[in-house]
Length: 599
Image 1 (cartoon, rainbow, N blue to C red):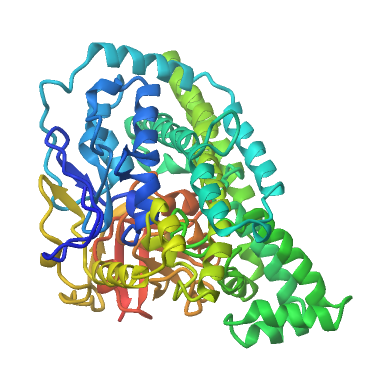
Image 2 (spheres, rainbow, N blue to C red):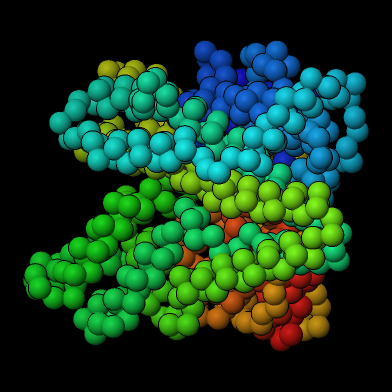
C-alpha cells in the first residue's frame, strides 16, 4: 500500500492487484464512489497500516454468510473485493463470477448482466481449477432455499430502528473537544452501534441482500424469456412503494406542491437555488404564520428524515442535503415546475396494480406446469422482499455514515477558524491517526494537505479505465477528461445500450453531469447522465426517460426508473458526450436504443 505521493505521480493511496482475482470494474461501484477516494475514507473503508478495513471486510463477511466462500480463500493482508487504482475504486468482477459459477440455478452470465452490465474490454469467463466447489454449491443452495421462503427481513428493520435512535441521540458535537470528535468518528465507524456492531455489519448486510436480490429477479427473467415475454420481467417488480432511495421523491413532491401553490414561495424560488435556504429562513422569521414558515417547518422535517442523502454520499467529505440544504432545494425547484400528473405516488400505484395483474396472468398461464408456476410465485414473493430490502440496507448505511459527516463538519469548521485548515473538509486528506498529530503539532501539515489535494485534483481530472485486467496502467498514462471528445450524433443516428426499463418516450435530451445542479432539466425532458445515485432520484420525477453511460440490472437508475415507470437505457457508452444537449430523442427501453430525431 502506498501511503504518500511518490516521484512518479502515483496516487497517495492504493491497493495491490490480485493474481487470483485479476478483473476489476467500475460498474456499480462507480455509483458509490464516482470520484477518487480520499485519505480518511481509504483509511477506514479499504486499508491502512494495520491491514484491510471495514468495507473490504464486509464484502468477505457477506460472501461467507451466503456460503459462496470460506475466509481462507482470501488474501488476509490485501484487498480482494475492492481495489483503489489511481484513486478510483474498483469492484472485483472475478470474485462475483465465481459466485455465479458455484451457485445452483444461476451462471456467470447472470451475474455479469445484473451487476456489471455491458462492459467493453472485460474478457470472457475462464474457469480456474479452484472455482468449482461442491461444498460451496450446497451452502449457497441452502441460502437460496431460505431466500425463497423468507416473508420479511426483520434484521434490516431492526437496523433501521437502531439508526433512527442513533439519529435521535446524536451527540452535541459543539460540547466535545477536537480530539474527542476525531476519536468518536473512528470509533463510531468501527463499533459505535448496538452490541459492538458498526459500519462493517451494516454494509455486510447490504451486500448480502443486494446479491441475493438478483436471484428472484433472475428466476422471473427465465420464466418471462421462456414465455417469449422478456419485457415483462421488470414490470413484475415495479411499484413496490417501499424503496428507500425513492422515498425522498415523495416528500420532495409534496414540498414542491407547497411552492407551486404559493406566490411568496414561488418568488423566493425564482431567485435561484444559491442561498435559497437562507432566504427561506429569513422570510419565515419575518412572517411566522406565513407560507415560508410552513414550508420551512416541513423542510426541516424532510432534512431530519432524508438529510443523509446527497451526491457521492458514501464519501464523508462530500455534502449531504443536511450539510448543504440548497442541493435539496434545487431538486424541489424542479418538482414545483412539474405538472400534477407526474405525481410519483400516483404513478407508483398504477404500476403496482399493473404488477399484480400481470403476475396473476402469468401464474395462470403456468397452471399446466405446477413446478414452474410454484417457482414463479415464490420468485415474485422473494423479489418483493429483497429488492426493496436492498435499497433499505443501503439507506441504513448512508444514514449511519452521515452521522460521522456531521461530526466532521464541526471539527472542520473549528480548524478553519483556528487557521489549521483552508477548508472544513481538509480532514479528508488525513488518516484518522494523522488528525491527532496535526492538531498537536500543526507545523507543515498544511503543506501535506495541499500536496495531497493537488494529487487528488490531478486524478479527478483524468478518465479512469472502466475495466482493468491484471496490473493497472500508471495513472500518469490516463487521459485527461475531454481530451478525446466523442463525435456527437446527428439526426437519424442511434446509440445502442442495454434495456433498463421498458417503454418508449420522446423528449429533449438534457445532459446533466452533476445532480446538485439540475436547473437545466425541464418537465418531460430526457435525463442523460453519466450514472446515478440516490441524490439523482428527484430528477427522475419530471423526466420522460433516463439514459446513463454505465449501469446494470440492479443499478440505481434501473431501480428508480422501475418505481416511476420511466423508459430507461443503461450502458449507453458515451451517451453524455455523444447525445447533443437539447436534441429531440426517442428512448426505447425495450430495445436499449436511443434515436436522435432532431439534433
